[in-house]
Length: 267
Image (cartoon, rainbow, N blue to C red; front, side, top):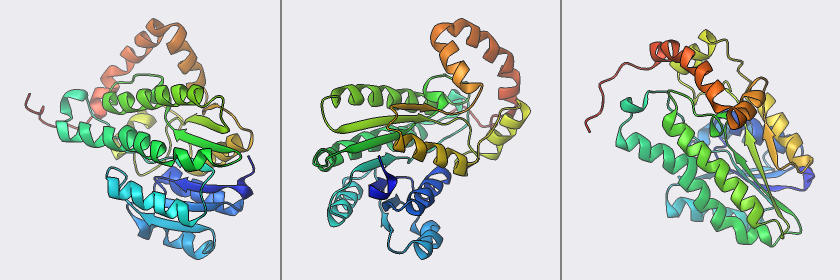
């Protein structure tokens, strides 16, 4: 799929990976509907690419927000690339997370993505060739302490991506699932970044992730897992989960040391 021919809906456009994707897509000649709750974060990009980036302020958890995106897609003459990059994260032990935080994370990372994808499928199917890209995570394949709710959302997104790809296999709509590893973005708390440093975990820059995603789009890939040894750990977790269990158990004291100290929410 040639990026210069793409008319894109990009969610999470003001986030670290989202902004990098918006810039990369515009630089390659794509028309980008940049969906964000913080349009001021895209002002520099709009000055740089005034004819290519179209900012839409919308909360995708609401029906009104999703309809705003649909209207923008119609004004552009339809889209052939949906790039679901919106997401939130929270590093905390599961007992430290309250009901509202669980609802919000699942609403943004999973439910809104499913609802927007369903709403845009008719316009995608009207194109000669179209693609849906879902940005997941390595934690969509490896359950990791301190990220139980986030893992739940990303495991579900990976399953949705696999099922929908197979459902659309006899159409002209493809689906690419992308699983970045830790990335240096504002979505990660200082505690999460400190944990990565303590564990000597490699952290990618969002520009590097965006470059790899756009290359995968051009190559019409179905899946993209980023980083080594994370790719190996994903395979090991599928084949020998007990081995991964033992390795992560050794990290538990360090993980607990960096989790926020809060009172356990009432049950």
